[in-house]
Amino acid sequence: MKEMNETKIPDFVRRAERLLVKRGGKHFSGNKVTNDFFQVKKKSCGSVLFDPFKLSWADVAMFYTLKCLTDPTDPFITKYQKNKLGDARLKCLDNAPHLTALVQAVGEQPNIKKWMEDRPGNEAEAF
Image 1: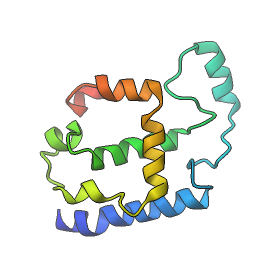
Image 2 (image 1 turned 135 degrees about the vertical axis):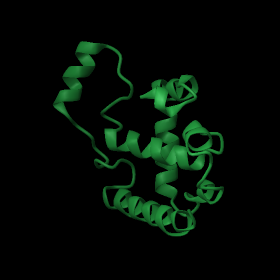
Image 3 (image 1 turned 135 degrees about the horizontal axis):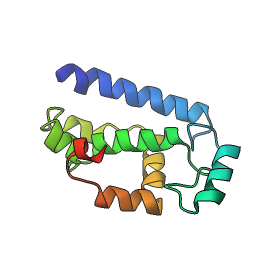
Image 4 (image 1 turned 90 degrees about the vertical axis):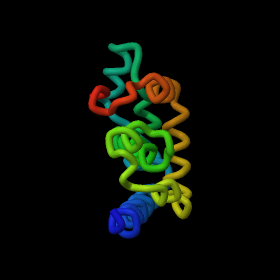
């Protein structure tokens, strides 16, 4: 776990921050997300988890990954992993302002916020 805390997680965050900045700093798919599939899907379904014209699935996946790492009460880390990663993970975004902003923006999406509040306590049950 020492290598994970001291090398792997910081390297992952550094690379992700660099990629996000390279793509405009707001979204992993660029700052202007357009996708005809999502437009049709949004019209036909009525309710979507997030607005695909603001976020991409890559943004949501990165949000969840980083949220698991930085939330001291996250059930995936505290229950499933039994907090094997330790507390160093909680500070992994200290030098990643764009990722920090992304996590905050995705977490503020109403349906994502609701899911995070209502999700099962055991990650194995969530999927």
